[in-house]
Length: 567
Ligand code: U2F
Image (cartoon, rainbow, N blue to C red; front, side, top):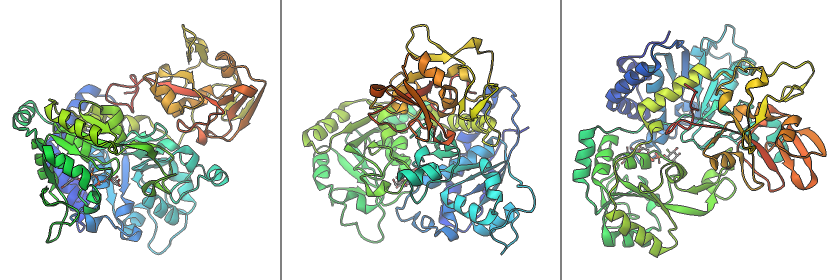
Protein backbone atom coordinates (compact mmCIF):
# COMPACT_ATOMS: atom_id res chain seq x y z
CA UNK A 1 0.00 0.00 0.00
CA UNK A 2 1.30 3.46 -0.89
CA UNK A 3 1.02 5.99 1.95
CA UNK A 4 0.74 9.71 1.20
CA UNK A 5 3.95 11.45 2.26
CA UNK A 6 4.00 14.18 4.90
CA UNK A 7 7.08 16.09 3.75
CA UNK A 8 9.37 16.48 0.75
CA UNK A 9 12.80 16.49 2.42
CA UNK A 10 13.72 12.97 1.29
CA UNK A 11 12.83 13.82 -2.32
CA UNK A 12 15.24 16.78 -2.29
CA UNK A 13 18.04 14.37 -1.28
CA UNK A 14 17.09 11.97 -4.07
CA UNK A 15 17.43 14.65 -6.74
CA UNK A 16 21.16 15.16 -6.33
CA UNK A 17 23.32 18.19 -7.07
CA UNK A 18 25.81 19.63 -9.53
CA UNK A 19 23.60 21.19 -12.20
CA UNK A 20 21.76 24.54 -12.34
CA UNK A 21 18.71 22.67 -13.67
CA UNK A 22 18.61 20.47 -10.56
CA UNK A 23 18.96 23.51 -8.27
CA UNK A 24 16.09 25.20 -10.12
CA UNK A 25 13.90 22.13 -9.66
CA UNK A 26 14.73 21.77 -5.97
CA UNK A 27 14.07 25.45 -5.31
CA UNK A 28 10.68 25.07 -6.95
CA UNK A 29 9.82 21.95 -4.96
CA UNK A 30 10.83 23.66 -1.70
CA UNK A 31 8.78 26.73 -2.55
CA UNK A 32 5.63 24.72 -3.36
CA UNK A 33 6.05 22.20 -0.50
CA UNK A 34 3.18 23.47 1.69
CA UNK A 35 0.87 23.52 -1.28
CA UNK A 36 1.74 19.91 -2.16
CA UNK A 37 1.18 18.81 1.44
CA UNK A 38 -2.26 20.41 1.65
CA UNK A 39 -3.25 18.91 -1.70
CA UNK A 40 -2.10 15.43 -0.67
CA UNK A 41 -4.21 15.64 2.50
CA UNK A 42 -7.26 16.63 0.48
CA UNK A 43 -6.81 13.82 -2.03
CA UNK A 44 -6.23 11.34 0.77
CA UNK A 45 -9.61 12.28 2.26
CA UNK A 46 -11.29 12.09 -1.12
CA UNK A 47 -9.95 8.58 -1.80
CA UNK A 48 -10.98 7.49 1.69
CA UNK A 49 -8.53 4.66 2.25
CA UNK A 50 -8.86 3.14 -1.22
CA UNK A 51 -6.21 0.50 -2.00
CA UNK A 52 -3.22 2.03 -3.82
CA UNK A 53 -0.22 -0.14 -4.58
CA UNK A 54 3.20 1.32 -3.97
CA UNK A 55 5.13 1.29 -7.26
CA UNK A 56 8.87 1.18 -7.79
CA UNK A 57 9.51 4.00 -10.17
CA UNK A 58 12.60 5.08 -12.08
CA UNK A 59 12.68 8.69 -13.25
CA UNK A 60 15.34 9.16 -15.89
CA UNK A 61 15.49 12.75 -17.16
CA UNK A 62 17.27 12.13 -20.46
CA UNK A 63 17.58 15.73 -21.70
CA UNK A 64 19.64 16.60 -18.61
CA UNK A 65 22.26 13.89 -19.24
CA UNK A 66 25.70 14.88 -20.55
CA UNK A 67 25.33 12.11 -23.14
CA UNK A 68 22.42 13.95 -24.78
CA UNK A 69 24.33 17.24 -24.71
CA UNK A 70 22.48 18.80 -21.75
CA UNK A 71 21.96 22.13 -23.49
CA UNK A 72 19.36 23.27 -20.94
CA UNK A 73 21.29 23.34 -17.65
CA UNK A 74 23.83 26.02 -18.67
CA UNK A 75 20.97 28.27 -19.83
CA UNK A 76 18.84 28.11 -16.66
CA UNK A 77 20.20 31.44 -15.42
CA UNK A 78 20.47 32.94 -18.89
CA UNK A 79 16.88 33.09 -20.10
CA UNK A 80 16.77 29.58 -21.60
CA UNK A 81 13.67 27.36 -21.49
CA UNK A 82 12.46 26.47 -17.99
CA UNK A 83 9.11 24.92 -18.89
CA UNK A 84 10.47 21.37 -19.05
CA UNK A 85 12.16 21.74 -15.65
CA UNK A 86 8.99 23.15 -14.13
CA UNK A 87 7.19 20.04 -15.33
CA UNK A 88 9.80 17.51 -14.17
CA UNK A 89 9.98 19.16 -10.74
CA UNK A 90 6.21 18.82 -10.41
CA UNK A 91 6.17 15.20 -11.66
CA UNK A 92 8.80 14.30 -9.07
CA UNK A 93 6.87 16.04 -6.31
CA UNK A 94 3.57 14.41 -7.30
CA UNK A 95 4.96 10.86 -7.57
CA UNK A 96 6.72 11.29 -4.25
CA UNK A 97 3.69 12.74 -2.44
CA UNK A 98 1.57 9.83 -3.68
CA UNK A 99 3.90 7.58 -1.70
CA UNK A 100 5.75 5.71 -4.44
CA UNK A 101 9.33 4.54 -4.16
CA UNK A 102 11.52 6.62 -6.49
CA UNK A 103 14.98 6.51 -8.04
CA UNK A 104 16.05 9.61 -9.98
CA UNK A 105 18.81 9.64 -12.61
CA UNK A 106 20.30 12.35 -14.83
CA UNK A 107 23.29 10.40 -16.20
CA UNK A 108 23.77 7.36 -18.37
CA UNK A 109 26.00 5.74 -15.79
CA UNK A 110 23.32 5.93 -13.08
CA UNK A 111 20.73 4.69 -15.57
CA UNK A 112 22.81 1.63 -16.37
CA UNK A 113 23.45 0.89 -12.75
CA UNK A 114 19.73 1.11 -11.86
CA UNK A 115 18.73 -1.04 -14.81
CA UNK A 116 21.35 -3.61 -13.87
CA UNK A 117 23.50 -3.19 -17.00
CA UNK A 118 27.15 -3.84 -16.04
CA UNK A 119 29.35 -0.86 -17.07
CA UNK A 120 30.85 -1.20 -20.55
CA UNK A 121 28.51 -4.04 -21.49
CA UNK A 122 26.21 -2.00 -23.69
CA UNK A 123 23.53 -3.42 -25.88
CA UNK A 124 22.67 -6.75 -24.18
CA UNK A 125 19.46 -8.05 -22.60
CA UNK A 126 19.24 -7.47 -18.84
CA UNK A 127 20.45 -10.43 -16.82
CA UNK A 128 17.90 -10.00 -14.02
CA UNK A 129 14.26 -8.81 -14.12
CA UNK A 130 13.73 -5.06 -14.36
CA UNK A 131 13.38 -3.78 -10.78
CA UNK A 132 10.88 -1.03 -11.70
CA UNK A 133 7.14 -1.15 -12.27
CA UNK A 134 7.24 2.17 -14.11
CA UNK A 135 9.86 4.33 -15.81
CA UNK A 136 9.22 8.02 -16.50
CA UNK A 137 11.60 9.41 -19.09
CA UNK A 138 11.73 11.55 -22.24
CA UNK A 139 12.68 10.93 -25.87
CA UNK A 140 16.41 11.24 -25.07
CA UNK A 141 16.07 8.75 -22.21
CA UNK A 142 14.06 6.38 -24.40
CA UNK A 143 16.87 6.33 -26.93
CA UNK A 144 19.43 5.64 -24.20
CA UNK A 145 17.35 2.81 -22.76
CA UNK A 146 16.94 1.24 -26.17
CA UNK A 147 20.68 1.38 -26.73
CA UNK A 148 21.57 -0.14 -23.40
CA UNK A 149 18.86 -2.72 -22.73
CA UNK A 150 19.15 -4.79 -25.90
CA UNK A 151 16.17 -7.08 -26.40
CA UNK A 152 14.88 -6.32 -22.91
CA UNK A 153 13.76 -2.92 -24.18
CA UNK A 154 10.99 -4.51 -26.23
CA UNK A 155 9.92 -6.66 -23.30
CA UNK A 156 9.73 -3.78 -20.83
CA UNK A 157 8.72 -0.82 -22.96
CA UNK A 158 5.10 -1.19 -21.79
CA UNK A 159 6.31 0.10 -18.40
CA UNK A 160 7.67 3.32 -19.88
CA UNK A 161 5.97 6.73 -19.79
CA UNK A 162 7.43 9.39 -22.06
CA UNK A 163 7.21 13.02 -21.00
CA UNK A 164 6.70 14.67 -24.35
CA UNK A 165 5.99 18.42 -24.23
CA UNK A 166 4.21 18.90 -27.55
CA UNK A 167 2.82 15.39 -28.07
CA UNK A 168 3.15 12.48 -30.52
CA UNK A 169 0.30 11.55 -32.83
CA UNK A 170 -0.38 7.87 -33.66
CA UNK A 171 0.50 8.31 -37.36
CA UNK A 172 4.03 9.34 -36.36
CA UNK A 173 4.40 6.67 -33.68
CA UNK A 174 3.79 3.60 -35.85
CA UNK A 175 7.07 2.77 -37.53
CA UNK A 176 5.85 1.02 -40.67
CA UNK A 177 3.00 3.47 -41.29
CA UNK A 178 5.16 6.53 -40.61
CA UNK A 179 7.75 5.26 -43.07
CA UNK A 180 5.22 4.39 -45.78
CA UNK A 181 3.16 7.58 -45.45
CA UNK A 182 5.88 10.18 -44.86
CA UNK A 183 5.23 10.70 -41.13
CA UNK A 184 8.80 9.79 -40.18
CA UNK A 185 10.55 12.38 -37.98
CA UNK A 186 13.59 12.59 -35.74
CA UNK A 187 11.48 11.72 -32.72
CA UNK A 188 8.65 9.39 -33.65
CA UNK A 189 8.13 5.73 -34.56
CA UNK A 190 8.56 4.01 -31.21
CA UNK A 191 5.49 1.80 -31.62
CA UNK A 192 4.40 2.64 -28.07
CA UNK A 193 0.75 2.93 -27.11
CA UNK A 194 0.07 6.61 -27.88
CA UNK A 195 -1.24 7.18 -24.34
CA UNK A 196 2.22 6.28 -23.02
CA UNK A 197 3.26 9.74 -24.22
CA UNK A 198 2.42 12.40 -21.64
CA UNK A 199 2.11 16.05 -22.60
CA UNK A 200 2.43 19.43 -20.90
CA UNK A 201 -1.04 20.62 -21.92
CA UNK A 202 -4.03 18.51 -23.02
CA UNK A 203 -2.96 18.98 -26.65
CA UNK A 204 -4.48 15.79 -28.01
CA UNK A 205 -6.54 13.02 -26.38
CA UNK A 206 -4.31 10.54 -28.23
CA UNK A 207 -1.70 11.17 -25.54
CA UNK A 208 -2.13 11.33 -21.78
CA UNK A 209 -2.18 14.78 -20.27
CA UNK A 210 0.50 15.04 -17.57
CA UNK A 211 0.66 18.83 -16.98
CA UNK A 212 2.38 20.72 -14.14
CA UNK A 213 1.14 23.02 -11.38
CA UNK A 214 0.86 26.70 -10.73
CA UNK A 215 0.90 28.52 -7.41
CA UNK A 216 -2.49 28.69 -5.68
CA UNK A 217 -3.75 31.64 -3.71
CA UNK A 218 -5.66 31.69 -0.45
CA UNK A 219 -8.51 34.10 0.24
CA UNK A 220 -6.27 36.73 1.87
CA UNK A 221 -3.80 36.65 -1.01
CA UNK A 222 -6.60 36.97 -3.55
CA UNK A 223 -7.91 40.01 -1.76
CA UNK A 224 -4.47 41.56 -1.49
CA UNK A 225 -3.83 41.03 -5.17
CA UNK A 226 -7.11 42.69 -6.09
CA UNK A 227 -6.35 45.65 -3.88
CA UNK A 228 -2.82 46.12 -5.22
CA UNK A 229 -3.35 45.61 -8.96
CA UNK A 230 -1.93 48.43 -11.05
CA UNK A 231 -4.29 48.72 -13.99
CA UNK A 232 -1.65 50.41 -16.14
CA UNK A 233 1.10 47.86 -15.65
CA UNK A 234 1.99 45.29 -18.30
CA UNK A 235 4.57 42.48 -18.25
CA UNK A 236 5.88 41.14 -21.54
CA UNK A 237 6.08 37.33 -21.93
CA UNK A 238 9.59 36.28 -22.89
CA UNK A 239 12.90 36.08 -21.06
CA UNK A 240 15.05 35.86 -24.19
CA UNK A 241 15.87 39.12 -26.02
CA UNK A 242 15.18 37.59 -29.45
CA UNK A 243 11.48 37.40 -28.60
CA UNK A 244 11.33 41.24 -28.61
CA UNK A 245 12.88 41.63 -32.05
CA UNK A 246 10.65 43.49 -34.54
CA UNK A 247 7.95 44.22 -31.93
CA UNK A 248 8.52 48.00 -31.70
CA UNK A 249 5.17 48.79 -33.32
CA UNK A 250 3.17 46.90 -30.68
CA UNK A 251 5.35 48.11 -27.84
CA UNK A 252 4.85 51.72 -28.92
CA UNK A 253 1.06 51.31 -28.99
CA UNK A 254 1.10 49.54 -25.62
CA UNK A 255 3.35 52.23 -24.15
CA UNK A 256 0.67 54.86 -24.90
CA UNK A 257 -1.48 53.28 -22.19
CA UNK A 258 0.67 51.19 -19.90
CA UNK A 259 3.99 51.02 -18.14
CA UNK A 260 5.82 48.08 -19.72
CA UNK A 261 7.90 45.66 -17.65
CA UNK A 262 10.13 42.86 -18.90
CA UNK A 263 12.16 40.01 -17.39
CA UNK A 264 14.75 39.68 -20.13
CA UNK A 265 18.08 38.13 -19.32
CA UNK A 266 21.13 40.40 -19.80
CA UNK A 267 24.76 40.25 -18.80
CA UNK A 268 25.92 43.85 -18.40
CA UNK A 269 23.85 46.06 -20.68
CA UNK A 270 20.23 46.41 -21.69
CA UNK A 271 19.65 44.13 -24.70
CA UNK A 272 19.27 46.30 -27.84
CA UNK A 273 15.94 44.59 -28.69
CA UNK A 274 14.34 45.97 -25.51
CA UNK A 275 13.33 49.65 -25.95
CA UNK A 276 14.47 52.23 -23.39
CA UNK A 277 10.89 52.90 -22.20
CA UNK A 278 10.62 49.30 -20.91
CA UNK A 279 11.48 48.64 -17.29
CA UNK A 280 13.57 45.49 -17.56
CA UNK A 281 14.06 43.54 -14.32
CA UNK A 282 16.42 40.98 -15.84
CA UNK A 283 15.66 37.29 -15.43
CA UNK A 284 13.96 36.91 -12.03
CA UNK A 285 13.92 33.94 -9.65
CA UNK A 286 10.60 32.17 -10.09
CA UNK A 287 8.94 33.44 -6.90
CA UNK A 288 9.94 37.06 -7.66
CA UNK A 289 8.48 36.68 -11.14
CA UNK A 290 5.19 35.65 -9.48
CA UNK A 291 5.32 38.77 -7.30
CA UNK A 292 5.68 40.94 -10.39
CA UNK A 293 2.66 39.22 -11.96
CA UNK A 294 0.61 39.93 -8.83
CA UNK A 295 0.93 43.67 -9.41
CA UNK A 296 0.51 43.63 -13.19
CA UNK A 297 -2.79 43.91 -14.99
CA UNK A 298 -1.68 42.59 -18.36
CA UNK A 299 0.64 39.78 -19.44
CA UNK A 300 1.30 40.17 -23.13
CA UNK A 301 2.70 37.57 -25.56
CA UNK A 302 4.39 38.34 -28.86
CA UNK A 303 4.13 34.86 -30.39
CA UNK A 304 7.00 32.98 -28.72
CA UNK A 305 7.61 30.87 -26.61
CA UNK A 306 4.82 28.53 -27.60
CA UNK A 307 2.67 26.82 -24.98
CA UNK A 308 4.73 27.52 -21.85
CA UNK A 309 3.71 27.66 -18.17
CA UNK A 310 4.02 31.44 -17.71
CA UNK A 311 0.55 32.45 -19.06
CA UNK A 312 -1.14 30.10 -16.56
CA UNK A 313 0.90 31.64 -13.75
CA UNK A 314 -0.08 35.12 -14.94
CA UNK A 315 -3.79 34.25 -15.05
CA UNK A 316 -3.52 32.55 -11.64
CA UNK A 317 -2.12 35.84 -10.32
CA UNK A 318 -4.99 37.89 -11.68
CA UNK A 319 -3.49 39.14 -14.97
CA UNK A 320 -5.25 39.20 -18.30
CA UNK A 321 -3.23 37.36 -20.96
CA UNK A 322 -3.24 39.04 -24.38
CA UNK A 323 -1.85 36.99 -27.26
CA UNK A 324 -1.71 36.83 -31.05
CA UNK A 325 -4.01 34.65 -33.12
CA UNK A 326 -2.09 32.67 -35.74
CA UNK A 327 -3.80 32.76 -39.10
CA UNK A 328 -2.92 30.39 -40.71
CA UNK A 329 -2.16 28.25 -37.65
CA UNK A 330 1.46 27.23 -37.01
CA UNK A 331 2.37 23.55 -37.32
CA UNK A 332 5.18 21.17 -38.23
CA UNK A 333 4.21 21.70 -41.86
CA UNK A 334 4.79 25.46 -41.97
CA UNK A 335 6.90 26.55 -38.99
CA UNK A 336 10.54 25.97 -38.18
CA UNK A 337 9.99 25.50 -34.43
CA UNK A 338 7.54 22.63 -34.92
CA UNK A 339 9.33 21.07 -37.93
CA UNK A 340 10.33 17.49 -37.19
CA UNK A 341 8.05 17.23 -34.14
CA UNK A 342 5.87 14.10 -34.36
CA UNK A 343 2.55 15.91 -34.70
CA UNK A 344 0.56 17.81 -37.34
CA UNK A 345 -1.41 19.65 -34.67
CA UNK A 346 -2.43 23.13 -35.76
CA UNK A 347 -1.44 25.74 -33.18
CA UNK A 348 -3.98 28.53 -33.48
CA UNK A 349 -2.29 31.03 -31.13
CA UNK A 350 0.75 31.33 -28.88
CA UNK A 351 -1.16 29.40 -26.21
CA UNK A 352 -4.13 27.37 -27.50
CA UNK A 353 -4.91 25.96 -24.02
CA UNK A 354 -5.33 29.51 -22.70
CA UNK A 355 -7.44 30.37 -25.73
CA UNK A 356 -9.72 27.30 -25.73
CA UNK A 357 -9.87 26.12 -22.11
CA UNK A 358 -9.80 29.51 -20.36
CA UNK A 359 -10.79 32.31 -22.76
CA UNK A 360 -12.32 35.68 -21.91
CA UNK A 361 -12.21 37.61 -19.63
CA UNK A 362 -8.82 36.09 -18.65
CA UNK A 363 -7.49 35.48 -22.15
CA UNK A 364 -7.74 37.68 -25.22
CA UNK A 365 -6.62 36.21 -28.53
CA UNK A 366 -6.54 38.92 -31.19
CA UNK A 367 -5.23 39.58 -34.68
CA UNK A 368 -2.02 41.55 -34.14
CA UNK A 369 -1.93 42.54 -37.82
CA UNK A 370 -4.91 44.71 -37.09
CA UNK A 371 -3.52 47.58 -34.97
CA UNK A 372 -7.01 48.88 -34.16
CA UNK A 373 -8.14 45.53 -32.77
CA UNK A 374 -4.90 45.33 -30.77
CA UNK A 375 -5.30 48.82 -29.34
CA UNK A 376 -8.99 48.35 -28.56
CA UNK A 377 -8.19 45.15 -26.67
CA UNK A 378 -5.65 46.94 -24.47
CA UNK A 379 -8.13 49.71 -23.64
CA UNK A 380 -10.89 47.25 -22.73
CA UNK A 381 -8.57 45.05 -20.67
CA UNK A 382 -7.48 48.07 -18.59
CA UNK A 383 -11.11 48.68 -17.65
CA UNK A 384 -12.04 45.04 -16.99
CA UNK A 385 -11.99 43.52 -13.51
CA UNK A 386 -10.77 39.92 -13.44
CA UNK A 387 -10.27 37.54 -10.54
CA UNK A 388 -7.24 35.25 -10.30
CA UNK A 389 -8.10 31.95 -11.96
CA UNK A 390 -6.43 28.56 -12.04
CA UNK A 391 -8.07 25.54 -13.72
CA UNK A 392 -8.37 22.62 -11.27
CA UNK A 393 -6.19 20.41 -13.48
CA UNK A 394 -3.26 22.77 -12.85
CA UNK A 395 -3.60 22.76 -9.05
CA UNK A 396 -1.50 20.36 -6.97
CA UNK A 397 -4.61 18.39 -6.04
CA UNK A 398 -5.65 18.16 -9.68
CA UNK A 399 -2.25 16.88 -10.72
CA UNK A 400 -2.08 14.37 -7.86
CA UNK A 401 -5.58 13.12 -8.69
CA UNK A 402 -4.71 12.66 -12.36
CA UNK A 403 -1.39 10.87 -11.78
CA UNK A 404 -3.00 8.69 -9.13
CA UNK A 405 -5.66 7.63 -11.64
CA UNK A 406 -3.08 6.90 -14.36
CA UNK A 407 -0.94 4.81 -12.03
CA UNK A 408 -3.94 2.84 -10.78
CA UNK A 409 -5.59 2.24 -14.12
CA UNK A 410 -3.28 2.61 -17.11
CA UNK A 411 -1.84 -0.79 -17.91
CA UNK A 412 0.00 -1.18 -21.19
CA UNK A 413 1.49 -4.59 -20.36
CA UNK A 414 -1.74 -6.63 -20.31
CA UNK A 415 -3.65 -6.98 -23.62
CA UNK A 416 -7.03 -5.18 -23.50
CA UNK A 417 -10.10 -7.29 -22.89
CA UNK A 418 -12.23 -7.92 -25.97
CA UNK A 419 -15.66 -9.48 -26.25
CA UNK A 420 -15.66 -13.28 -26.20
CA UNK A 421 -15.68 -14.42 -29.80
CA UNK A 422 -15.53 -17.85 -31.44
CA UNK A 423 -13.71 -16.72 -34.59
CA UNK A 424 -11.31 -13.81 -34.38
CA UNK A 425 -10.34 -12.13 -37.65
CA UNK A 426 -7.69 -9.88 -36.14
CA UNK A 427 -7.41 -8.39 -32.65
CA UNK A 428 -8.73 -5.06 -33.94
CA UNK A 429 -11.56 -6.51 -36.00
CA UNK A 430 -13.73 -8.84 -34.00
CA UNK A 431 -16.63 -10.68 -35.49
CA UNK A 432 -18.62 -10.78 -32.25
CA UNK A 433 -21.84 -8.75 -31.95
CA UNK A 434 -21.59 -5.07 -31.26
CA UNK A 435 -22.02 -4.23 -27.57
CA UNK A 436 -23.43 -0.82 -28.57
CA UNK A 437 -26.99 0.41 -28.94
CA UNK A 438 -28.66 3.47 -30.47
CA UNK A 439 -29.25 6.36 -28.04
CA UNK A 440 -32.91 7.20 -27.27
CA UNK A 441 -32.90 10.13 -29.74
CA UNK A 442 -31.08 8.04 -32.38
CA UNK A 443 -28.20 10.52 -32.83
CA UNK A 444 -25.35 8.34 -31.61
CA UNK A 445 -24.49 4.99 -30.02
CA UNK A 446 -23.96 4.21 -26.36
CA UNK A 447 -22.85 1.09 -24.47
CA UNK A 448 -25.73 -1.35 -24.32
CA UNK A 449 -26.57 -2.66 -20.85
CA UNK A 450 -27.85 -5.83 -22.52
CA UNK A 451 -24.48 -6.54 -24.15
CA UNK A 452 -24.08 -9.19 -21.48
CA UNK A 453 -20.41 -8.40 -21.30
CA UNK A 454 -18.58 -5.94 -19.10
CA UNK A 455 -15.05 -5.25 -20.31
CA UNK A 456 -12.24 -4.43 -17.90
CA UNK A 457 -11.87 -1.01 -19.47
CA UNK A 458 -10.54 2.26 -18.13
CA UNK A 459 -12.12 4.71 -18.60
CA UNK A 460 -15.27 2.67 -17.87
CA UNK A 461 -17.38 2.03 -20.99
CA UNK A 462 -20.47 3.60 -19.45
CA UNK A 463 -19.01 6.96 -20.46
CA UNK A 464 -18.73 6.02 -24.18
CA UNK A 465 -20.73 7.77 -26.91
CA UNK A 466 -20.09 7.03 -30.60
CA UNK A 467 -20.58 9.94 -33.00
CA UNK A 468 -19.94 10.25 -36.74
CA UNK A 469 -17.71 13.16 -37.76
CA UNK A 470 -18.32 15.78 -40.43
CA UNK A 471 -15.89 15.23 -43.32
CA UNK A 472 -13.75 18.26 -42.38
CA UNK A 473 -13.51 17.35 -38.68
CA UNK A 474 -11.13 15.28 -36.60
CA UNK A 475 -12.57 13.07 -33.87
CA UNK A 476 -11.10 15.49 -31.33
CA UNK A 477 -13.25 18.26 -32.84
CA UNK A 478 -16.31 16.04 -33.32
CA UNK A 479 -16.39 15.16 -29.62
CA UNK A 480 -15.53 18.71 -28.53
CA UNK A 481 -18.57 20.08 -30.37
CA UNK A 482 -20.77 17.84 -28.25
CA UNK A 483 -19.20 18.91 -24.98
CA UNK A 484 -17.28 15.63 -24.84
CA UNK A 485 -13.70 14.49 -25.33
CA UNK A 486 -12.36 11.88 -27.77
CA UNK A 487 -11.27 8.70 -25.95
CA UNK A 488 -8.89 6.60 -28.08
CA UNK A 489 -9.03 3.55 -25.79
CA UNK A 490 -12.67 3.09 -26.89
CA UNK A 491 -11.93 2.79 -30.63
CA UNK A 492 -11.68 -0.98 -30.25
CA UNK A 493 -15.37 -1.21 -29.34
CA UNK A 494 -16.58 0.52 -32.48
CA UNK A 495 -14.20 -0.94 -35.04
CA UNK A 496 -16.84 -3.39 -36.33
CA UNK A 497 -18.85 -3.79 -39.50
CA UNK A 498 -22.05 -3.95 -37.51
CA UNK A 499 -21.49 -0.53 -35.97
CA UNK A 500 -21.80 1.16 -39.39
CA UNK A 501 -25.17 -0.53 -39.77
CA UNK A 502 -26.27 0.53 -36.29
CA UNK A 503 -25.43 4.12 -37.21
CA UNK A 504 -27.54 3.86 -40.37
CA UNK A 505 -24.49 3.97 -42.67
CA UNK A 506 -24.85 1.93 -45.86
CA UNK A 507 -21.68 0.09 -46.87
CA UNK A 508 -21.46 -1.49 -50.34
CA UNK A 509 -18.09 -2.87 -49.32
CA UNK A 510 -16.01 -3.04 -46.13
CA UNK A 511 -12.23 -3.20 -46.08
CA UNK A 512 -9.82 -3.49 -43.19
CA UNK A 513 -6.69 -1.39 -43.71
CA UNK A 514 -3.96 0.53 -41.89
CA UNK A 515 -5.00 4.18 -41.82
CA UNK A 516 -5.05 6.52 -38.83
CA UNK A 517 -8.44 7.91 -39.94
CA UNK A 518 -10.22 4.52 -39.76
CA UNK A 519 -12.85 3.37 -38.88
CA UNK A 520 -14.48 5.69 -41.42
CA UNK A 521 -16.85 5.80 -44.36
CA UNK A 522 -16.35 7.32 -47.81
CA UNK A 523 -20.01 8.28 -48.19
CA UNK A 524 -20.15 9.16 -51.88
CA UNK A 525 -18.92 5.68 -52.88
CA UNK A 526 -20.52 3.87 -49.91
CA UNK A 527 -17.23 2.27 -48.93
CA UNK A 528 -16.60 1.49 -45.26
CA UNK A 529 -13.20 0.98 -43.71
CA UNK A 530 -12.11 -0.69 -40.52
CA UNK A 531 -8.82 -0.19 -38.73
CA UNK A 532 -6.40 -3.08 -39.09
CA UNK A 533 -3.73 -1.81 -36.69
CA UNK A 534 -4.87 -0.87 -33.15
CA UNK A 535 -1.78 1.32 -32.63
CA UNK A 536 -3.14 3.63 -35.33
CA UNK A 537 -6.43 4.41 -33.61
CA UNK A 538 -6.27 8.21 -33.55
CA UNK A 539 -8.44 11.11 -32.44
CA UNK A 540 -6.33 13.45 -34.59
CA UNK A 541 -6.56 13.73 -38.36
CA UNK A 542 -9.22 14.24 -41.03
CA UNK A 543 -9.65 13.97 -44.77
CA UNK A 544 -12.63 15.52 -46.58
CA UNK A 545 -13.17 12.13 -48.28
CA UNK A 546 -14.23 10.44 -45.03
CA UNK A 547 -16.63 10.67 -42.16
CA UNK A 548 -14.96 9.07 -39.18
CA UNK A 549 -16.48 6.99 -36.37
CA UNK A 550 -15.50 8.74 -33.16
CA UNK A 551 -15.45 7.44 -29.59
CA UNK A 552 -16.30 10.26 -27.20
CA UNK A 553 -16.66 10.37 -23.41
CA UNK A 554 -17.69 12.80 -20.69
CA UNK A 555 -15.10 14.51 -18.45
CA UNK A 556 -14.87 16.04 -15.02
CA UNK A 557 -15.20 19.79 -14.89
CA UNK A 558 -11.67 21.22 -14.77
CA UNK A 559 -10.05 17.79 -15.21
CA UNK A 560 -10.37 16.85 -18.86
CA UNK A 561 -8.13 13.77 -18.50
CA UNK A 562 -10.68 11.98 -16.33
CA UNK A 563 -14.24 10.89 -17.04
CA UNK A 564 -16.89 11.35 -14.38
CA UNK A 565 -16.53 7.80 -13.05
CA UNK A 566 -12.81 7.55 -13.66
CA UNK A 567 -11.51 7.95 -10.12
C1 U2F B 1 8.26 27.05 -22.96
O1 U2F B 1 9.40 27.20 -22.16
P1 U2F B 1 9.73 28.54 -21.42
O2 U2F B 1 10.72 28.33 -20.35
O3 U2F B 1 10.09 29.55 -22.45
O4 U2F B 1 8.32 28.84 -20.74
P2 U2F B 1 7.79 30.05 -19.92
O5 U2F B 1 6.31 30.06 -20.13
O6 U2F B 1 8.56 31.28 -20.19
O7 U2F B 1 7.98 29.68 -18.40
C2 U2F B 1 8.87 28.85 -17.78
C3 U2F B 1 9.01 29.31 -16.36
O8 U2F B 1 9.89 30.41 -16.30
C4 U2F B 1 9.62 31.12 -15.11
C5 U2F B 1 8.12 31.09 -15.02
C6 U2F B 1 7.74 29.76 -15.68
O9 U2F B 1 7.33 28.80 -14.75
O10 U2F B 1 7.72 31.18 -13.69
N1 U2F B 1 10.23 32.45 -15.16
C7 U2F B 1 11.19 32.76 -14.24
O11 U2F B 1 11.54 31.95 -13.40
N2 U2F B 1 11.77 34.02 -14.25
C8 U2F B 1 11.38 34.95 -15.15
O12 U2F B 1 11.92 36.05 -15.10
C9 U2F B 1 10.39 34.62 -16.10
C10 U2F B 1 9.83 33.35 -16.08
C11 U2F B 1 7.76 25.66 -22.82
F1 U2F B 1 7.49 25.42 -21.51
C12 U2F B 1 8.73 24.71 -23.34
O13 U2F B 1 8.15 23.45 -23.29
C13 U2F B 1 9.10 25.03 -24.78
O14 U2F B 1 10.19 24.26 -25.19
C14 U2F B 1 9.47 26.51 -24.92
C15 U2F B 1 9.52 26.91 -26.36
O15 U2F B 1 8.23 26.89 -26.94
O16 U2F B 1 8.50 27.31 -24.30
